[in-house]
View 1 (tube, rainbow, N blue to C red):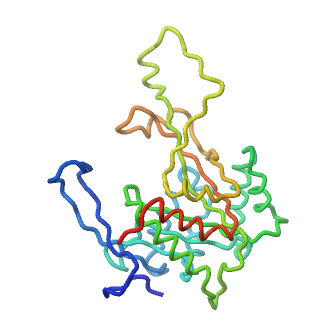
View 2: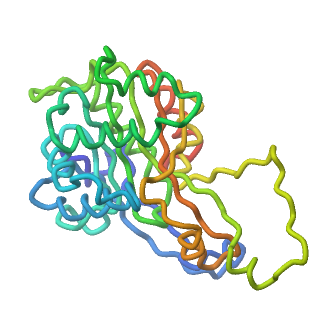
View 3: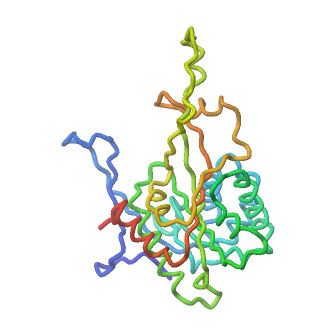
Length: 291
């Protein structure tokens, strides 16, 4: 199924505009028109671009998983998922979204790695009993893992079409088998916390250290803003530390153009399949649907 249509009858978005100056108040600010096109996965074209986006999604833990095998699994089911491109079908993807039936692929080595990884990373996280239950080996739930990533600075308006396409596809019978019978969806994403710089603290050398409030908690920020809408429909959600998080100096290395360091974390959102349509509509309302 080709998602890009060239004629005027196509009601699916094919264009967005980005302000390259970042100065909305300037009437003379330059605008560049970028054609965003939605395509099915193509194993002959998309392997390397998809693998690059998967590395970005798993951040510092990317080498703990066989991402080549994961990319192959995604590309082997082109009836589920979408890539976004700017220079035609032959170009590399700038964004993607797909769902993987964990039961269907449970014997794949990378799926065993991924399930074990998620179980280990969330083992000490409180308040996510339902998440642990659906990830357990004896679970009766049929879990679909939603993976999505995009290049930094991609306009968030490309996201609602990705979810709308997926919603259509999981409800369309496929000769290779679809995810229509899934009972739950697990969305893997990323968040981050801002961390005070140890370098600045060393330079200032205050006479007395301030005591941190016992009740204060670090604010969570979202790499994917749609997560805020999605988790309002969730059974459970949590952020988790990466296995290769690094020391505090790693946060300082990620603070270009700002005073605070950045501490990335993985993020999971568990959703009942019956709530997925409402969640997709919420994403569309929250981010806006491009015309």
